[in-house]
Length: 353
Length: 110
Image (tube, rainbow over all chains, first blue to last red; front, side, top):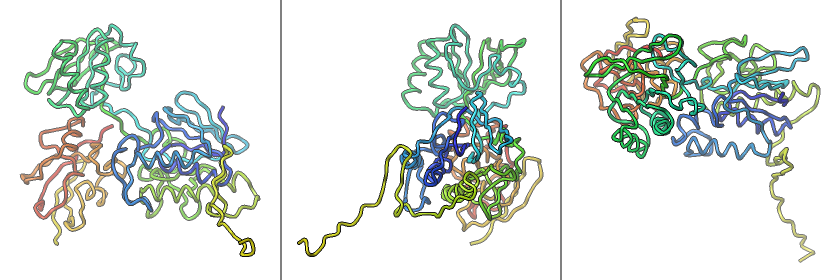
């Protein structure tokens, strides 16, 4: 069991900045994120895109913003549970919460801050009616262990980097690799595209473009798929596995069933006070929350995180006095023993000269 | 600057006639969001970067639209329910030429 002061669900910019504000109040944080890396959308969807409305940054790349936040919070030694989705929450008799992930990792804290953005990123599933029936029975949307495809017949669908890269990789592992893509051109990195083209020429990858997988057949497990070609029509392809790789889509997911008040696909909070939800001790900050006049901006998330931490402090330290101190005055005392503090002016006494 | 009239069919098949301003640098996705023609959170997921297909729509009038740029083309190559007349709403800026444009929203990806 991981214990901390604040469990932060979502390691996007808002979640990361929460660690800093909490740290100033001597509160420790642990972040949970379904993605394998910190940064949320900024890292996953648009790391190379510029943002122009972060105060005092005329322009900053989303990826750099995340790197800077990671640097800023380092002294507060946040814990991370990455690549796992927060699935359930239980309130204990002592008022603390236990958050458990889809992989069973348990976290305990008196305060939970949901900074989940648009939700957790889930694989985009193609609209094939019976596809869910074959999940884990030949259909997979993420390749975790490529060894399970050894000597198997595999059909991959998609036109991005992951479809290309896995086609290349599995061409050495699987018995047969078929890559199905709707267009003639691929959007992946140029060398991956060239490699796949070369493998197709050598007969190591069966490349079918201008086509889509539209149906799956099999008695319990995948035995074949129906491929629809733009001009040649439909045909059946024998296969053991079907791996659609169409990227990720954010979903609010299990959080929607935590008993929190949901409005417009977001969590309702008390914005007059501290961004607390209808469940005391659970806060929602950043893009995941809603209140009258809400704007889904990173800079608003930072503000919400700051106020939320003040409220969390009072909950964790009832009755204990605290007055907000400017970092310029108080410096930043890290949990790692580091101390950042403003340099003192050199004072020279006139008599010493 | 004047407003243009757009005919937007939502995901339930209801036709909405809306007046959209041409002087606010808005795109079609933002107009649909602004008029709340679909539930919040089901359109414009990526914020308008052509990086999701939540604003995909089918253009059903004969308007001459600006050509697709690489990002839009690439996203539509990966999206579902794509037809010949598919476009991403976030890549269509509201200009006076669009007066009378008719679009139907593509089904939501689940």
